[in-house]
Picture (spheres, rainbow, N blue to C red):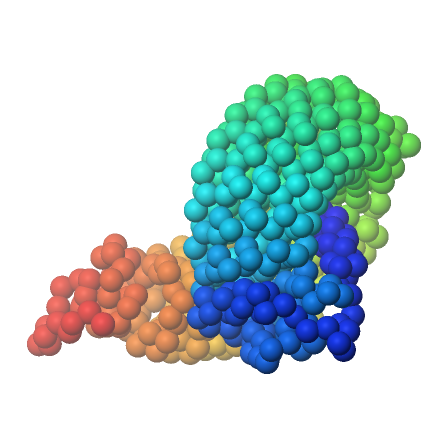
Length: 589
C-alpha cells in the first residue's frame, strides 16, 4: 500500500513538473497574481519552513519565490508548498486566504504537511476554473468541504486528507469527471458515499479511510474500470460486499478493514487478477474463505483477521497464490489444529495465526524468510528453544497465551530481533540470557510476564534500545539495579507481582521517556525517590502493596494520581494521601 501511495505521489510530482516551465528572463509576473500571493502570505502568521521569506520583490515569476511557477505570459499557474518529509518540526501557522481564488491561471495548488494551517477552505477556490491538482493534505483545516469544488471541471487530483473536515461528502464532487485521484481520508466526514460518484469513471485511486462514513459499500464502485487503489478502511460501513466490486480487473489494492461488514466473501473474488493486497480485517464477515482466492496470482498480502470465518480452509495447491508473502487469519472461528502445508511450505515473511486453535508442538517453518510470527492465543505445547536459530530475518516473535514450557535461558533468537512476546505461558529460568549484550542490542519489546521466571533482574549495559520491558507476574527476586538508568529509550516498565526487594533506585528518574510504570505487589522499602519528578512524560504509575514509607514526591503527576496508586504500603504520606506528620501539606504544583 505504501509503495502504491509513493507511486501516486511520484505521478503527482511529474504532472506538476509538466506545468513548471522554466522562468523566462523577460517574464514579469502579473501584479494581480503577486497581490494574491502576498494576500496568502499575510494570513500565515508563522512559517518555520522559511519558504515565504523568499517572497520579496516585484517579480514572483523570476524563479526566486519558492513554490511559485508561472506560464510564459507571466501568470502564476503553480503554487506548491510542501513540508519536507525529513523534518516533521517544520510548519506554517495561519489560515488560507480567500485571495488564492484570484489566481485565475492556477493549475496546481499544493499546500501540504503544514500542520497548523487552520480554518475552512475558502469558497473562492471554487473560481479556479483551470485547476488540475488540488492537494491540501496534512494541515489542520476544518469545517465542511465546499460544494463549490464540484465546479472545478478540469480537476484530476483532489486530496484533502489528514485534516479536520466534518459533515457529508458533497454530492457535487461527482461532477469532477476528470478525477484520477480522490483522497479524503483521515478526517471526520459522516454520511454515506455519494451515489453521484458513479460519474468518476476515470478514477484510479480512491481513499476515504479513517472517517465516520456509514451506509453500504456502494455498487457503483464496480463502474471504476480504471481503478487500482481503493481504501475505505476505518469507517462505519455495513452490509455485504457488493459483487460488482469483484469485476475490477485492474484493482491492485483493496482495504475495507475496520468496518461493520457482514455476509461472506463472494466466490468472484478470484476475478481480481491484478490484486496484490486484500485487507478485510476487523469486520463481521462469516463463512468459509472461498477457494477461488487461490487464483490470485499477484496477491502478496492477505489480511482476513478478526472476523467470523470458519472451517474449512480452502485446499490451495503449491501453484496457488504464488506471490503470497504475508498472511493474517487471526481471531476468527477457525479450528486449524496444525498449520496447513500451503502456509508452512512457502517463503513467507509474515505469518499471523493467533487464536486459530493450533495444537501440539511448535511448527517448523521454512527459516530463511520469516520476519514476523504471531501464533499467540493457541494451544501450543513443549519447547521452542532452538526453533529460531537460523531465522536470520526474524524481527517479531509473538507466542503469548499458549502452553509452552521451556527454560528461557536456553532460548536462541537471532541477533537482530526487535520484539519478543512470550507472556502467559509456563516459561521458567532466568532473564540473564535474553538481556545479554548480543541479543538485546536491537530489542525494543520484551514481554515475558505471567510465567514462572525466577532469579534476579540483570544489570543493564549502555546502548540498549528497549522501549517496553514487562516481567510482571513471575517469581523474580533481588533488587532493581541502579543501571536501569541505561534504558534511556524505555517507555513502559512493569515488574509488578514479583518478589523484588530493596529500594527504588534514584537512577530510575533518568529514564525520562517513561510513560507507564508499575512496581506494585513487591517487597520494596524506603522512599519513592524525588528524582522521579524528572519523568515528565509519565501517564500511569502504580506503587501499591509494597513496604514503602515517607513523603510521596510532591509534584505532578505523583501528587494527583489516585490514592489507590499508593495503597497498602507501610507509611506513605503526602498528597494524594494524608499529610505527613509534622509537615504542612504543600500546594499542588
